[in-house]
Amino acid sequence: MLSLLDSAVCLDGVAVRKFMKSTLKSAVLILSTVLVASASISSIATAQASKKAKPVSYKQVQAIFTAKCINCHKAPRPRAMMNLESYAGVMKGNDDGSVITAGSPDKSLLYKLITSTGRKQMPPRTPLTKPEIDTIGAWIKAGAKNK
Ligand code: HEC
Image (cartoon, rainbow, N blue to C red; front, side, top):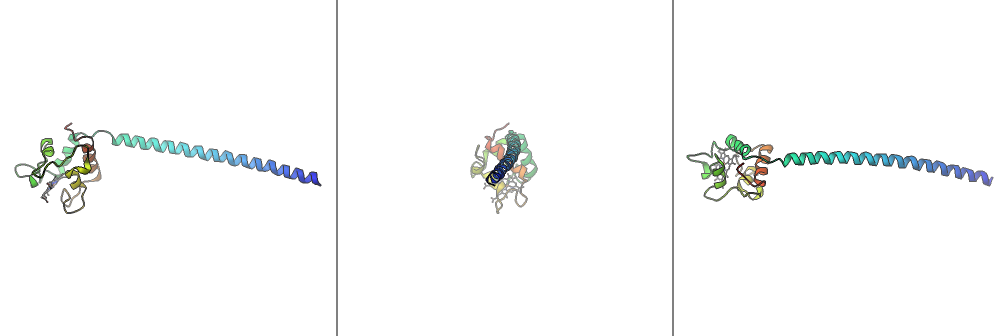
């Protein structure tokens, strides 16, 4: 009787071990799937980051100013004395001072105005699109160069 019980326990032991083995196997499988998935997600993220890091040329920035700003910001009487027709004009700023702080979008008045949602928003009442804002922000961050 005792030996029968013993073998039952033993059998159970085998069954438990088998069960553990298969659980472990699927755990490893799930884990590796997760790892592969996260690896590919991070490679997508890296691809996107490097896409973002692609330098913005001033030409792209001037195209936005030309399309959305110079109606009001061109010679001979630019609003707020702020001429946005050229790189020189943009970097010169106006009587209040410079509107671009190379390297720091958040310290640049021009960037603050295009991201503002208040009364001072530029252009007034018709905000730039997110890609336009991002283009100008990236250009300032990269040093606001004339190239
Ligand atoms: C419909 C006309 C209009 C358009 C379009 C417009 N602005 Fe302005 N902008 C103004 C006026 C008016 C002022 C003066 C506002 C004030 O003094 O409160 C001004 C002032 C500014 C100033 C100077 C702010 C200061 O305090 O010295 C900057 C910089 C500026 N705009 C940038 C832009 C940019 C960048 C765009 C395009 C994305 C743009 N503006 C589009 C009318 C316009």
